[in-house]
Image 1: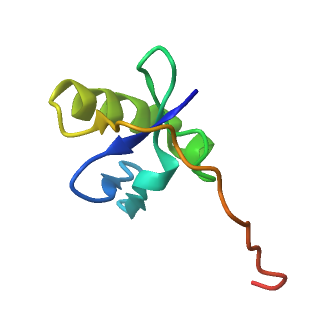
Image 2: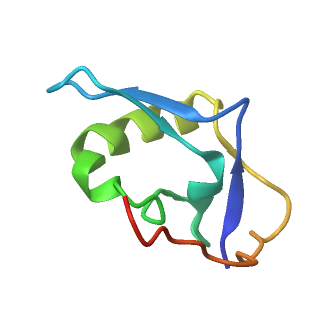
Length: 84
């Protein structure tokens, strides 16, 4: 069972290599049954994992991201572009 993350807005990260600003939607962040924040549903997660995991841990410890009260909803539909 996963629980949605609650915060004041999307989570921002600046890539330390390229300087690129990255915004992670809250819908991509879930707390697992053990209370650990998981961002693996965010598609570019593996590209930023080493930078993102410590940042998310710090935000959780500071109380900036907290678990919600209900189970995360299942996506109603998935839309993919056929062309870039």
